[in-house]
Every structure is written in C-alpha cells, then in structure tokens.
Image 1 (tube, rainbow, N blue to C red):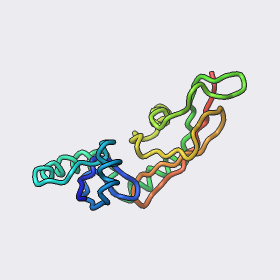
Image 2: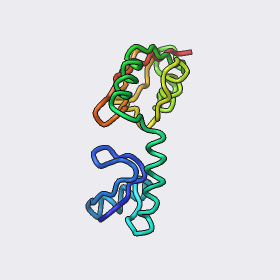
Image 3: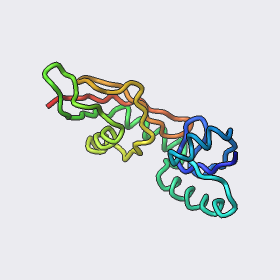
Image 4: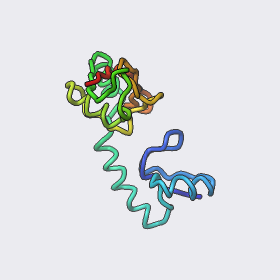
Length: 148
C-alpha cells in the first residue's frame, strides 16, 4: 500500500514522505490514527504544503541541532505539579508539559512530538528525557519534577 505520511512515524519517515507499507499496517494503524493518508495524484500536491510546514518547525541543519543540544544539556528544567504526600503525582508528566517547562526555563522552543519519555514520569524527583533534534542528533535533558 502506498501512503503519504502526515505525521512523523519513527522507523518509517517524516511528514510528506511517500512510503510503501503492508496493507494491514496502513489500513489498521496509520490511516485511522491520522499518521498517513492514501497516496493519490491529488494527494501528491499536498506533499508540498506538508513539507513546507515541516521545514518551518524543523531545526535547519546538523550544526544548529548540535548547538541546541548543547544548550539543552546545560539547561536546568524544573516542573511544578501536584503530588501526594508520598511523592506520587496526580496523573503524569506529558511531553507538552516538558516542552512548556523548557521554554519557561529559557530554552529553545521544542516540538512536543520530538520529546521521548522512556518511562512514564509519575513521581517527584529527577528524570532523564531524550529529545530528537535531528535524525543524527539526540539530546538528553534532565527534568526536575517538584510537587506542590
């Protein structure tokens, strides 16, 4: 099945890429979740607008990505959230919360879809989060979660 990706899918491609996948994967996973749309001649025209939007959000080149990774490595990010007496959070910390905390701490504006949390953050303390800035550059970020 030939599809046009509308969102980034790790291991498959970026928005605007035309990919060939198995029918079931496309029909049952990618299309219903809005990650892709069927390839058509008319859909090919939409690729340009998808790629323009991606270029506006994406960090331009490898050098810039390395510079941003250096800034993120030296940044202290503190995130205040509600927690119980035992240090357990009411809910969990999301990638959107982390992106907002990085911006509030004076860091660069990050796309929440580029932030990867390996284990759900559900407790107070220091946690390590990975940020994919470029296909070749990933930065680690320490987030200090403080209960209020």
